[in-house]
Length: 303
Image 1 (cartoon, helix red, strand yellow):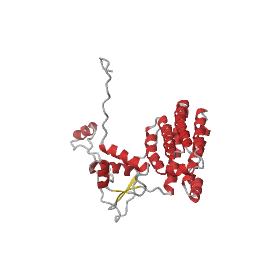
Image 2 (cartoon, one colour):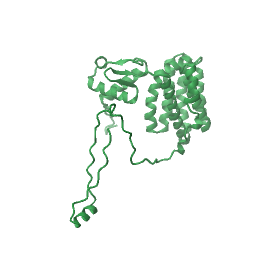
Image 3 (cartoon, helix red, strand yellow):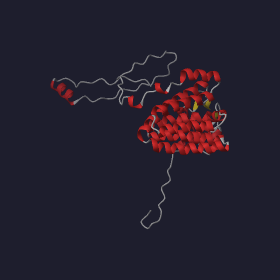
Image 4 (cartoon, one colour):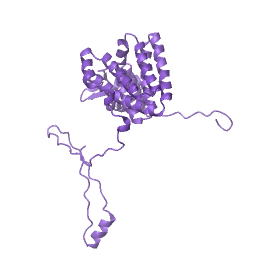
């Protein structure tokens, strides 16, 4: 409110055009408007979105880096195809990320998180009653978004964002394979109940079973059997967040094997940084009537 009681409007937040375009493209990939394997033409997309090709190209490059699009030299940019191995890997990563989020929220604010998850689960139940698979899938993803957001971890959030986009690319197939969507609601309800009871072991076990079930419904029977046996670990095998050390010792240098000369791209050599000798070294050199000592710079790093 201003001094005279009139309401004050917040300024409009401006976002770079490339970020806005990347968001629109991501939504189109998630809802199937841009299906897997679809080639993206810059001229066509720029005309449809009403944007110039510069920010469109930047947006597409962002999505290539996130793994949502793929770039092929001399061919163009395509929406990624998700193979059975990709789907297995997605759920392997989601199991790890969401298990870590569960361990955080159950130690901090399990009741608050359970309340928020229950609201999303109620939306899932309503969609199931209406027989609306699209609304069911959206409420399902919202529930998992809430779980990650409640953890408060920015890094878990960044990892989950890409995984959720990839999940949405195949989630429609998941929802129609349930004989009764109420089964999906029941799985999430059990997870929320375990969180309310602060039963961490049961919570992680139910989340792991939920991910395995989702993977089994997405993959062909033979691929699902292989994935269930080897790809997705048991929840007990995942490291406890509290057991992960805060610091990790990293060696100063890591040897990089030489690439074959025929396959190596042109090397870009970063020149060594100029290092000013310490004052004590300079004084000692002057006293000895010798030129100042020159400390070697770091070895050039490969591009």
